[in-house]
Image 1 (cartoon, rainbow, N blue to C red):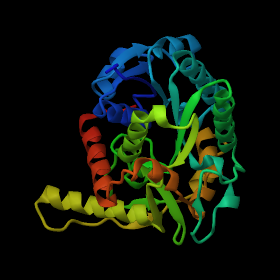
Image 2 (spheres, rainbow, N blue to C red; image 1 turned 30 degrees about the vertical axis):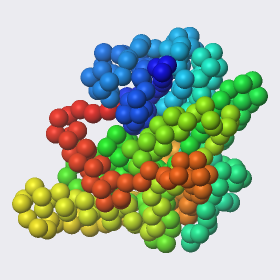
Image 3 (cartoon, one colour; image 1 turned 90 degrees about the vertical axis):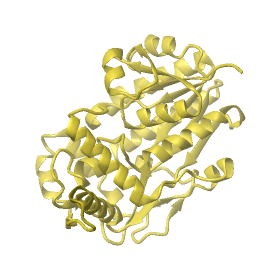
Image 4 (cartoon, rainbow, N blue to C red; image 1 turned 90 degrees about the horizontal axis):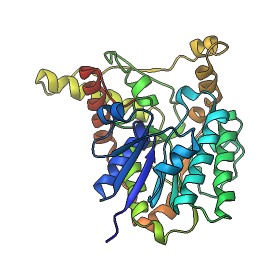
Length: 341
């Protein structure tokens, strides 16, 4: 059997690292692109063949993709900055590299492509892949253009796969809302602060489940339609469902550490938006956060019927287990002062 090779960009990050690990478990040889391969070997997932390169340089991607059957593009501009100036050129280079290698390009999609017109105030919306895309944010508009680039490249022979999911969380998601806000990364969790709104539903994607989905689809990539978009449902939680799950996990961790049956459960408090608005004129990241606020006050549930029809099921870890593993990984990173970048 011919060796299956996958190239992963952004493999030292959350989604890229998780997908790289999933592909390894499925028997793929995985090549990781990194500006500093030695540092990537220390901080990134184990078992990858690391090669030097930058996703902003087309020649680097073309060289790294040689021989690959799939190219997972997980590289993102850091800190929500310069999306149009960075994300689109990186994707253009990934398209060129995938076309040159005859590889299928895999891309994680987001909810940013949807505007408030497809959401409902009290839940009940199940969005399929053909739902209209009317983003009202700059980042959402860029995401729509990026997926349009894939569709245009399909006419020139590119095979692509987009799997759209909600907000990431998991052991390899150090920059997620769950880690940085709900779990207060680097600080004791004495309270759980959440932007979730009572009555509204929110889509969450546990990265190991999403990565396993990509790996199963990669195994079947030769049988997939040339240009395919799928929805990953993940955990659809109403009200403060994620915050309550985090509070429960913290209480369990406290009890286990103390050798008791029960631990102190931190209170759940609403996220304070006023400081975000106050700092927005001076901080790009905060302006982007405000643009995405509507995602917390409205409800959306991704319809994964097409995905289930292809795979038979969607990989799904129970919420309590997923949150506990995320908290444990966060505490372990804090203890050793290291982790995925």
